[in-house]
Amino acid sequence: MYKTVMKIDGMVCGMCESHINSAIRRAFAVKKVASSRRKGETVLVTAERPDEAELRRVIGETGYTLVSLETTEE
Image (cartoon, rainbow, N blue to C red; front, side, top):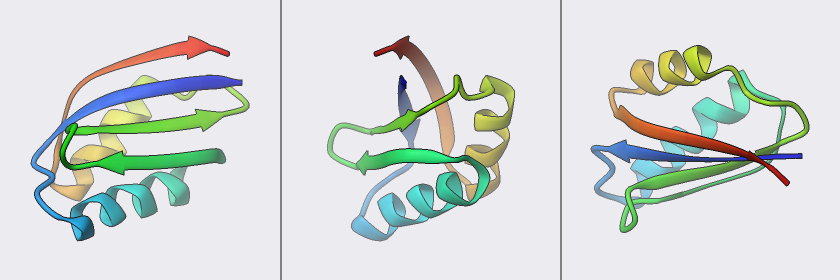
């Protein structure tokens, strides 16, 4: 399992969190995804290491900015 923590700029409400979560679920096979506007981050858990370029593309298409990401093996 892989845990990816992404810092995302632009989330200001619950709908922002939902929008990002939905976009990630559509593009990746995730075990879990959770966004927090207060922390400015999204955490996802996947069976395979997610492609960083694809994550940047998916987040960019939502209108938010992926500032940084870190993936660790759990």
